[in-house]
Length: 83
Image 1 (cartoon, rainbow, N blue to C red):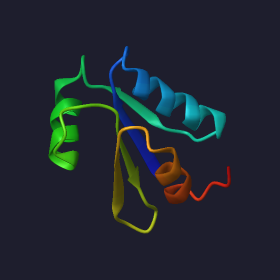
Image 2: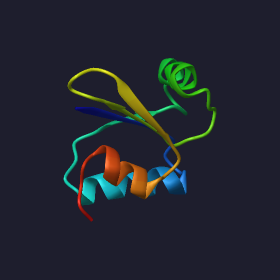
Image 3: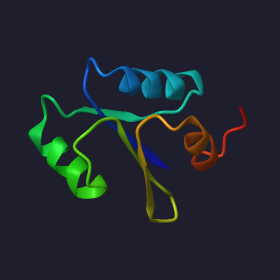
Image 4: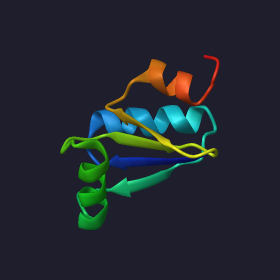
């Protein structure tokens, strides 16, 4: 499973998502869309969103889940984590 967080440095919800993943010892890639236009373009193509955070979870068996914003319950479910 590969997790990518599209974020900006000062976005409070981005910080919450990254802190949550770190607490759960989940490895993720953090792409700063404020400094990386290519990442911003990919984020918009995948999610249709201009706002951050956008979390893309690429599953091992194929397919991906896209989470808009910090949705703790959806993250727990997709990542199969017990509180």
